[in-house]
Image 1 (spheres, helix red, strand yellow):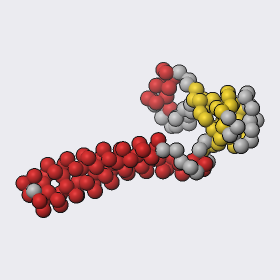
Image 2 (cartoon, helix red, strand yellow; image 1 turned 60 degrees about the horizontal axis):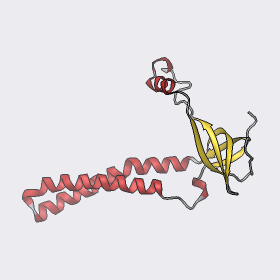
Image 3 (cartoon, rainbow, N blue to C red; image 1 turned 90 degrees about the horizontal axis):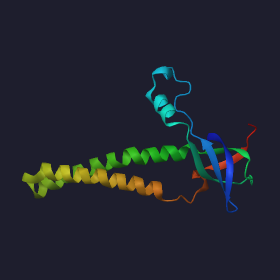
Image 4 (cartoon, rainbow, N blue to C red; image 1 turned 90 degrees about the vertical axis):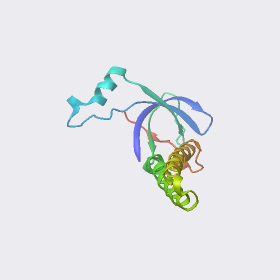
Amino acid sequence: MIEEVGKVVGLAGLEYAWVQADRAKACGSCSSETNCSSRTLTEFFGKNRLKIRALNPIEAKVGDTVVVGLDETRIVSGAFWVYMGPLIGFFVFALLGYFVGNWIFPKLSEGLTAVLGAGGILLGFFIARTKAETPDLDSNYEIEILRLSDR
């Protein structure tokens, strides 16, 4: 479970709350902290706050400092679809283009392979985007308020 501390800034019905959290720095304890371009960009653009909607099973109230959490499987699943979806689409459609091209249009085989491969990449991106925008019915994939924080 990935956890972050935030402050409840509003309620959204009975089940959800709006939680405001600081965006965590990516390189707090990195050995190349002094040479890190991510740190330089973070300092340049300033400290941003992130406002998220989270399940509120503990019935936290506005002003409470809470710990929110997200199951890691959501991130792993999302990363799989973003990276592997277009890659799998490319290989499947490029191979389809190669075999269909050699069988039906031998002189256009390379072009058909390239066009279908590019189409497979676009289809993979479309599938990844659709998966990201489709709300999951399983509450394990939602950000949830876990407990009140002692900070």
